[in-house]
Length: 440
Image 1 (cartoon, rainbow, N blue to C red):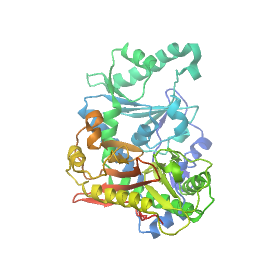
Image 2: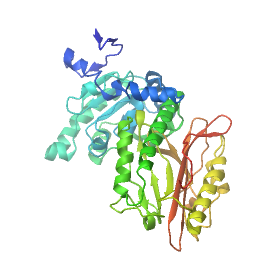
Image 3: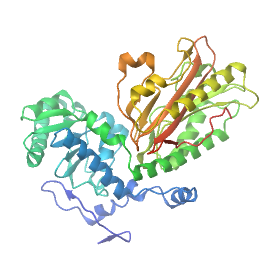
């Protein structure tokens, strides 16, 4: 059977004891947003910019292989994933990602040696059938109180029995199941069946840390799309524009370019730029003021673009205080980016990192952090924060790090936020973000 002129190469099993879906429902597989993709116009724009489009089949195979490698290292028979980003990584499927982040109605079972089963919400099987990583799609069973009310524990027992049966089929003798987000009711229901539960957080973070060629191709397209949207925001950056209007322009431009969501609303102007972390407000930017933003964008192909810039409104020369903060932030970005090399340890970067005296200037939360589908492992801490939360590790080729800087005088005044997205290569690093760091 052909759908929209293309032979259907993959058809996962639908449910347990459920009938094969009707033809009209299979048509919706090709109507899925991931199957439709960015569209010919945007793809042509990327190709014209010299970018390579990702091979999504190869991307899915690479990611699933990474997950299973980490499951084997942890001696686990399978993973049970509720975090939409972990489900996306393992299966390349989504359903209302932000809503399902706080409503546990959708999950995936990934056997180390066996099938990948997506448990879908509300007859949404057609949302997952596009992905070669998925072997079977079943209706999800949700026992959260919102859905199950006082029957929550009863329904959790039914849910746990189904998971236990899948684990038994994949069991190598350990009965170890990695779980990422599970409440007490689910935890107890699985443990009562003799299942040893393991934290899937480290497993998934380590799997996601090293990007494959198609991850990087997708990320380059996402960065190009994000920077195009930033250009549209810059075009309306004039005295009197509100922070809301600037953020709306970035958001709209991102959505038009296959973006999925923005995790924060970090944009502030004038006195709101120091300290950092004010989100966009109704305030109008005045001539001569600074305006800083952090994209935090889950963009094209679900890849995160996390870059920051600070601009001066209305042109003209910056004040001495503005120039001081900007110069220090640029120096911090340049000097610390150079430290991000293959084989460098996190502790080594912490010890060698450059930033102004923290007693005189407010700084950012971390020196740098990993990025993929969102902010990811690792996080590299400042020297004065190491004892509280620092840890060691090694940068590997294929990791992508966001190198951060925020400079704001503790005595007051405006602040400058800058951030670059940096690929660790075999021989050094490559800054993936391309927009100038200047005050505009």
